Amino acid sequence: MAFLIFSAIFLAIFYLHFALAHRAWIAIRGKQSSELDMGYVRLEDYFGQSFRRKLKHWLATLPAATNSTAGLRVYDHGKERIYVAPTVQYPGGRVEKEILVTEGAFACGPNCDFRNELMVKGDGDIGEGTSLQAIAADGALQLGEGVTVRRWVDAAGKLTIGADTAIHSRATSRTAIEFLPGAYAQSLFAPEITTEGRNDESIELSPVRGALVQIPHGPQETAGARHGFDPAKLFSMGGGTYFYEGNLDVTAPLRLRAPIVVRGHFSCGKESLLEADVKAHGNITIGPASVVKGNLVADGNLQLKPDVYFQSLLQAGGEMRLSFGVRGLREKLPVAAHATKAVTLESNIVINGKVSSANRVIAISTPMAWLQPNKARA
Image: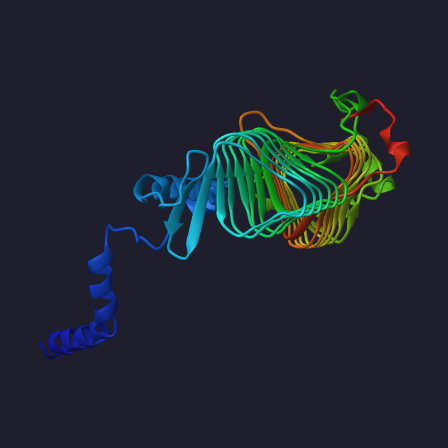
């Protein structure tokens, strides 16, 4: 009996440590905080969609100001004003401090400055050197050279990001993004992302020719030892996954048939076929004209050489470089490429999905020598 009494007192004292937390949990159980919008992490175009919803609510509930006219409706929203016009075409050098909504097309000349958001319900054409807070377009949107966007860009139609344009947050489109040399953003998301010099004839998708090195290897296979693969350093981790001790730099075509963890750098020769995931503690370099079906995760840098075709996730703890002719395509699902440091996209790249960086994603112009069709096998 004494033990039971002692246990009850102990449990009561223990519960008191969590009583306030338990009471708070009961109060909010089954409820969703109005301060949190889970769409922020689920929707790539969250900023554009959120702005559209808020703007629609404001225009439906706010009374028009007394100085509204047939061609320009004005709404007061706290300290801000919302201008609504049928179509707008601004000359160069215009400065606009209010939220602007156009019910048709929008265009502006060079070196304008828009201090607040723009909503374009038609097509948009932004002049070179213009500075924007943020812009959403229900049609196609073209950003001229050297445009600066302090926040986000979202378009329902094709989004063209001009040379040397800077976007300091997300750029999204529900159709396509063309990303020209010198432009950079924190992330890009669209059904199709392309860089300059797209040439689909430069790549012929065909089966990779016979690999000289295979992992896992058969008991009689010794060719790998002559091409940078040492079978003695390969260990089974169970569950069909393998571990390689040290750097794995395969100089010949490689066929990877099982997931592998490399305690060092990983690289493979041209025309390799990676059917499974690769995790490397160092850098990952994929040889030209290879096919990557598994995920690639590098603690260091990650580089895909020219004409690589990938169908998966790319993740780099350092920098990432996607070379000329890289294709990121997968049926039904988008692909994704993310790096902690900069992501560099060369010419003639096509990616269906997302490219992002904690630093920046930047496009560069590949030397013209690469722009000639090479009929590489990817």
